[in-house]
Each structure stands twice: as structure tokens, then as C-alpha cells.
Image 1 (cartoon, protein in one colour):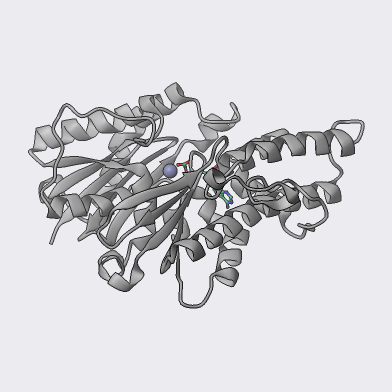
Image 2: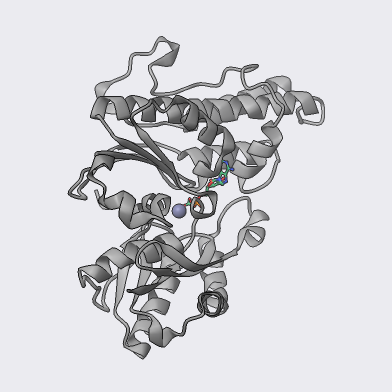
Length: 350
Ligand code: KG4
Ligand code: ZN
């Protein structure tokens, strides 16, 4: 039996969690800074770092209390090393190093991106991960910072198939919402605004899908592009706005529904095509945008029989430390710990 303490500070969520044996989440505390960043329309890295600094101790105390354990009972600490915002990451990493050193607990820096994929396996991780019939596994990680397709073999080896060449899908939703003055973060507010709207009233572009008669270059088969859709929205608003510069309510609803539909359509279409081409036995959808109900329903409806669909539970889609603690268990099992001189990293290693 092993208890791993997870710590996550890669963006605007300060999180700590206690996870038993890689899948049983005893506690998962998340302090969101969203309200602090909302006024700026996006995350301000230095502000995030300062907020992590004050939030970490109470969040850690809360996670330990909720799990009913003390630091002395923790077998290892897993902390997000990257990718993410460097000032934010450095706070969590330094905090974890201090905790580890002061309490003589081994610690390991883990990858936030892999953590998101792991989030889809919490609560029953070991069984599902060890089942050979699950592989190859195709993961779509779709968040404010990533839109990537990764193929994972039975040996655990991950191959990056492709990713966004400009904006991430979550970023497209966030920027779209900002343009429409709907607030931040855009994903949830877009989903709410789209409810009851007609998703087929307006045709927003579906780049790199071979739609619109544009042949798809082979190197872009598994890549995404979401910056054009935001530009299309800008022109759409200019064309349809009233004198105050706003869209009338019904038009706004249809616009947002159509915009969200374009994002969902591209994500599902490309992922399902990649699953077919690679012979994937499992499709995992993880990351903040995987909270989206329209996206979840679309995958549930279109995933072919014979392919397992694992949608990360909503509470493990957006940033959390349970996914970090769960992943950390697998390092603990192999006794793969980090030295005290490791540094944070902003981007996925190429
Ligand atoms: O994984 P996450 O918390 O942070 C990153 O690692 O980026 O993802 C945040 C992103 C934001 O872009 C947010 O707008 C999006 O996830 N998001 C959603 C929903 N909830 C959060 N997008 C669409 N629908 C949602 N319900
Ligand atoms: Zn994330």
C-alpha cells in the first residue's frame, strides 16, 4: 500500500491530493484563482505564482485532513514539473522540494500532460491500465494549453501523433468568449450560452479536416488549427452586431452554438479518424475541454463498437492534483525519484 501526495500549480489552480495505490482518491483539494484572473481576461503568470504561494499551505492541510492522514504517513510526493507557466510551476516545485527535504519523503517531478491522460483512469486505474486489450490507446488531451493526439502502446511508450499548430481548442473557446464579452474562462460560459441555440445556423471553419474542398497535407493529418475560427467569429460579429456592437440574444445563442459545434466537430472527427487509422482499442479524452457536454455526447455517440471510450470524470478534467498523485504512484513503484536540482519546464519535450 502506498499513499502519494500530489501537488499541482502549473496554471491557475492550486491543488493537493492524497491518492492510494495509484487510483483511490482519498482527497482532492483545488483552490481556483479564476476570479483573480477574470478581470484580466486570462491568466497572468506572476499573479498566479503569488496566489499559489499563499494558497499552497492551506490547500495541503485541507487535503491531508480530508484524507485523514499526516505527512509522516505519506510514502512519496509527486509534483507537476511541467509543462505550464514557469513562475507558477516553480512555486509548486520548490514547495514540494522543501516538504520532501524537511520530512525526508522521496519526491518525483511528473509531467502535467501525461497527468491529464492519467486522470481518465483514476478510481480504477491499475485494472484498466494493466489490461492488454486496452492498447493501443489513443489519447486526445484538450485544454487551454493543449490539443494533442498521443498514441500509447502496451509497453507504455507514447508517440505524439500531432497537435495544434496555433491555438489550443480551449484557447479558441476562451478567446471567442472574450470577443463576445461573455467572461472567463470561455469553455463553461460558451457551453451555457449555446444551450438551446442552433448549432447549424452558421458555418464556422473546420481547418485541417479536408472540409471546404481544401486537400489535407499528410503532415497535418493529426494536427489541429483553431486560430482561424476565432478570426471568423470576429468578422461574423462585425457583420451581425447591432449599433451597440453586440449580438441580439437569439443570434448570440446560435452563434455560440455554431462556434462550439465547429470545435467539437473538428475534435471528434479527427480523433475518430486517427483511432481508425491506428487501430486504437481505447480512446481517452482528457483535459479541461473534455468537461464539455456536447463533446462528451458526440464521442459517446460516434465511438464505434469494439473501441472503449474513457472520458475523464469531469472533476479530473480540469487541473487537479489527484491525477498527479495517481501518476506519481507508478514512479514510486519503480523507486524512480527526482534529485533536488530538477527544474520546471514550460513545454513538452520535442
Ligand atoms: O485543463 P485545464 O484546467 O487547464 C489547462 O491545462 O489548460 O483546462 C482549462 C480549459 C479552458 O480553456 C476552459 O475554457 C476549458 O478548459 N473548459 C471547457 C469547459 N470547462 C473548462 N471548455 C469547454 N466546455 C467546458 N465545459
Ligand atoms: Zn492542465
